[in-house]
Amino acid sequence: MKDLKHLLDINYPIVQAPMLGVSTPAMVAAVADSGGLGALPLGGLSPEKTLALIRETKAKADKPFSVNLFAHSLEVELIEAHIAKMETFMEILHKKYNLPFKSQSISGCRFYNHLDQIDILLDEQVPIVSFTFGLPEAGVIEKFIQRGVKLIGTATSVEEAVLLENAGMDAIVAQGIEAGGHRGSFIVGEELPQTGLMALIPQVVDKVSIPIIAAGGIFDHRTIKAAFALGAVGVQLGSYFLAADESAAGEVYKEQALAATDTSTELTQAFTGKWARGIRNSFMQDIKNADLNIPHYPYQNSLTTALRDFGKLNGIADIISLWAGQSVSKSKRGSTENLFKELIKQMQVNPNPVF
Ligand SMILES: Cc1cc2nc3c(=O)[nH]c(=O)nc-3n(C[C@H](O)[C@H](O)[C@H](O)COP(=O)(O)O)c2cc1C
Image (cartoon, rainbow, N blue to C red; front, top):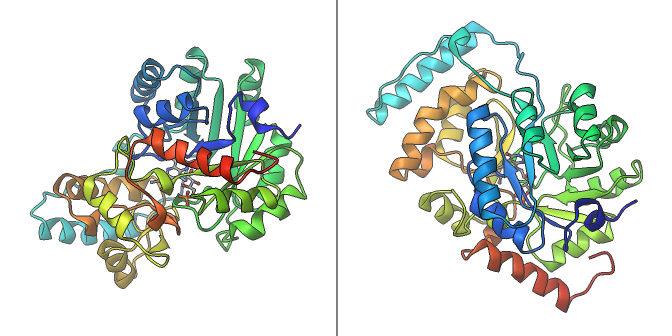
């Protein structure tokens, strides 16, 4: 069964990407109520925030929406010496902005993952759950399947896609290297998977039988049709919605997105310890120049949070994580509803049999 619209109960096979820090309940509701799949990003959030955001989205949306979680383990290897050097580096940077720096004890940090959130999703009867950063545990998948919840995994390679299908996912987001934000990769080994979407879709489609949703660099009817021509039956757009009215990206972030070119982004571990694509800025360059060992996610993420928050508050693009994909120059201002409807209009003028 390859029909995504029937599987997810939507009118159009377009997913608004879950973008932590950018996709708001208002954005999710606008897409859901326009007939697409709105996706609420809740990865790594506390149970309290998880519940509050689901309830807020429910209050705004007439139609159902999906929720996105981080399916990684929080048991990562942390090397004290690497953390100490990174803290020294961050302290110097904080001083530059007259910002106090607080050293954190590793054991004192409280991090969350999907295991802290699934019972809330079940209680709230969320109908569709998507995952990135991993393969959820068999027991977690079983719980959702028993309640009829549809499950979507994220793959950046054929191997990951096959694992997700075998584990019981209903659909897979195939994320190309063009994509903005974190790589969803969970089989990394020596090398991070860096396959482009054009190469990834047909190779995944040839190996799995569940529906494939293409993500990375999609922003109009040409890119949607290309993804469909390669075998995808749905598309997931993130950067396209970055500068939307309902986006939580600050004004300086939106300006950087709108001023970007095809070569403005690169992959970095600098902000969070996980590979992610964002618009190049001096923080990324400074970390590169310092040639430090970057502590794993989520530790590096919490080490840089205060500086990034300060950057957001004061509109300093140099120290904000400006997550964006290779086609971010095609993002536009306007309401999410109008941006979504623009895609539908383009697809109606340039029809495609799968759409
Ligand atoms: C700002 C930003 C935040 C993101 N956060 C998440 C997230 O929380 N969960 C997730 O599964 N994907 C996340 N992504 C990746 C998107 O789901 C999607 O793969 C990507 O946006 C597609 O590429 P595009 O940006 O070129 O459209 C994020 C992407 C961006 C740009």
